[in-house]
Length: 489
Image 1 (cartoon, rainbow, N blue to C red):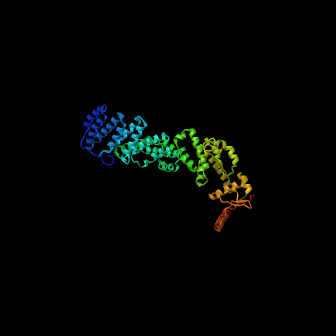
Image 2: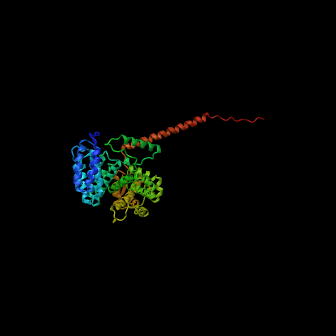
Image 3: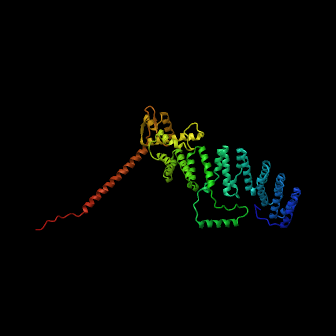
């Protein structure tokens, strides 16, 4: 039994099954109903005697006879009947469901196929021992709805499954199910649900594994064989050493789509870095360049903070950036405290950036998000310039500031206000005097602390000088005096 210990058969019906099964199959050629009833009578005896092997053979024989007779209504009827028999063996039911699932591809039309799918879903509902089979049947139904163009129904059907709780399903299959759920939610436009479902996948499972030596591989193989030998019917088979590159790329492709939709540029940059850390991408030069470009584009688009600044400089130090010199040159401009004039940046880098699907300088772009990212890129250039000015100036006149930023006064005030609100810089605008002050006022404690620190440093220097003078005087005293010799006649 799937839920408990294996029940020992009271009687072995193997000989009876070997005799009656061929007879029933021969009888089915002329009378299907009589053949089924003949096997049902023997199935009752084997079921009551807990003969699992014989019961499984008979149940499979019954549904096979119905299928070969092309009587799909009788097949559905027998599947329901056999699953509800008193004391029906759970492993026999599982075997029957698995066999009937194989029949789905042979259905003569979509109507019969859908009826059999609904029958299987009814039989497997609420039964843990056939939860994996129910999930697979539900996935087939979802794919049919998707092919028919009903994305909403396909998403609703598939998302009712909580596959992460299925203990008997392999980890790879669970991940594939969840990725399919997320994909359908994205196509449906349910971005919130897609984000919730995607968090069910562990990134540790998808992370890059270090290469193992032949000795380690042999040891792991022996451990898996030992676990397979000791495992019970309830337990899932041991996970093989599987290449999950395809799952990893699908997962991060979806995560990038979600991040781009929500304008989370820093998250998109991190996801592209994970894609970059994939052996298949590293070996493909074109894909490697694309990934390197996207990493640079999204880290530039991310709002400035400590995390963004740290990641920006780490990306700048990546030696692989030599393969994309133009993008590397753009990235370098954001790492040095120097002004970038937006007209020159747009002229120099604009055509190259707009060749990608990330940016589009045209307001009538097919992807409105691409135009928004172009505007955000301009915003990041201006914010960088404001930070540079704040670093070098304590006070500056507004006309001079607008000249440095290539903006009018209203836009200049707007960007300064946004940076002040984000606590990136400190600034005060004196409109009547038309002066912007970047000097942060200090309270009495700060002034005293600075004075105390300066005095401590000064006294330390004086003490050091006094020590050196004393040392030189002592060295001068201990040096021997030169005695002048008079020449003899």
